[in-house]
Image (tube, rainbow, N blue to C red; front, top):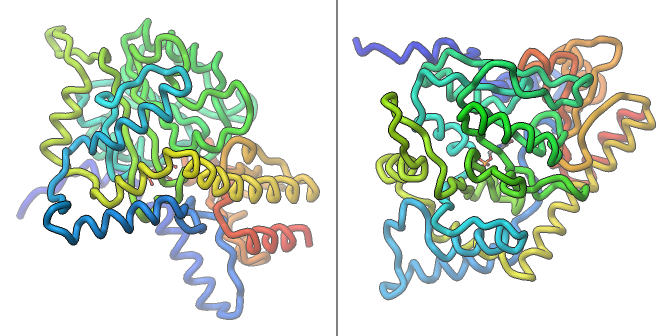
Length: 397
Ligand code: PLP
């Protein structure tokens, strides 16, 4: 019999969202009339911006014509999209990131999960707790064992200090999933200084950067001096433009970012990633890349802003409701996530069950994101307005 990769057995047996789905299904079967409102999974509900639909429709037509048909595209993405990202997300903001430092993918989940493959298994990694589960699980699957958890608590504003010991790889996420909190310039500078001192590489997940409303909160880690020497950035069109089902994201690996061999030879990380992608990935669909590129126009920017403002308004409604009820929470200002402290010391799963049973509302138990997520529940603002308002009314009653 073929032997399995036993690292998979070290993972929690159930993916968090499968367990939630199971409990919701059980409840619905027993209570068929209950009108369940899902504020749990981080999936969007509003349609794609018109500019994206128009661009993809046009691209579909091109695919039906021999002169304009496209087969395999470049593994690292079409230049028309890489150029637009470089210009609109970086150069317009004074950040010098060029098209050939950008690698298009079919979403950030794969990128965040796959990036660790180009690093040695004996690297020590640092991960926030609670955390987006992909960072941790992908490292466990690979067989990495030296993992340091950095507790994110109310006391440290969900922003732990760099560890006292040396780590090689650091996962940062701002705006944060699940806590909805952000890392400011000073904090990021501190991490960059740490990474420089310890020759570490930072993975900066900016999947929610479009949700930042407060001035002075960095949208990109490259806004901070020195970041290009130590950081890889991940971005996604999922929450920026409603692409959760359409699939497009990208990784930025700066030109001069190096790793090292065991004998001390410096190797460009960008080249390793390209090598990995050309072997294991065959590019994001042309049609989808055309759709993504369409947000980089004046009209496209207006349309995605409207979309993001819709979800941010939902977040505001939830936060106002929770305030009125007197529940403690964090986030919701620069992020579509609200990190609710469970009342009366309920555990995360107990409170999840309470909300489901008494109010027919689904949240995500904080404990599913790590031990420090215990006694928290994550609510998302990705529902539609009507359901969000209804959920808040139910809670108030
Ligand atoms: N990073 C974070 C922090 C996320 O929360 C998500 C999705 O929920 C992703 C990355 C992945 O997004 P996608 O694969 O849809 O691009």
